[in-house]
Amino acid sequence: MGTPVPGCAALVLFLVLTLGLEERAEGCSCSPAHPQQQFCNSEIVIRAKISGEKIVSPSNNSSPYLKMIQYEIKLIKMFKGFEKVKDIQYVYTSVYSSCGVQLDSSNKVQYLLSGSMWNDGKVSIGLCDFIEPWDNLSLSQKKNLNYRYQMGCDCKITTCYTVPCTTTTENECLWTDWLLDNSLSGDQARKFACIKRSDGSCSWYRGGAPPEKDFMDMSDP
Image 1 (cartoon, one colour):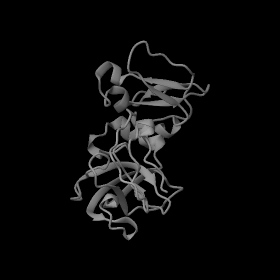
Image 2 (cartoon, rainbow, N blue to C red):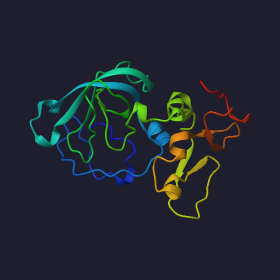
Image 3 (cartoon, one colour):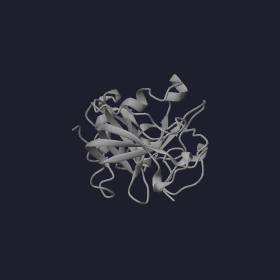
């Protein structure tokens, strides 16, 4: 069985369509996740163009519930997954809009794609993954993909839904975009990364200004 799509956690209401899996996917719901969480939970994170697409049936199975969209990609840059794969030619997603993602296959749009790997090395992407047109990302998000998100993968990001909202551990950052703006794409999502400090605690860091001296080995690219 393949690896489930990261990020869906307890709210996943479906089984990922993987090669050889016979169950039908019924639907998908994703809990709010900061881009850093999506990055850290993903096995593969890349920048790519989509140059083609077609419907395929994994393992030569004709069941309509196993059909996938196979996107042919042109890999531009890999941010995560070097140890798992050197090159990626295709990514796969569910044909069902409830969990699959629809991408522009005209070879004109660059995407940030994150996902997981099946046991046979194929890459799957889904609704709960970090998937955005590259031009929609903020400058800070593009910089954070290079090293800051990875630096904070040992930190815990807690979504604040109601007040009071307080940290419970030193390695925790409170994500308040949802609470303050009822949005998953507020300032903290677009401009900040939760970074581990030299004393082991975690704190939000905003790119652009010079880093504080107690951050480890940090500089703007």
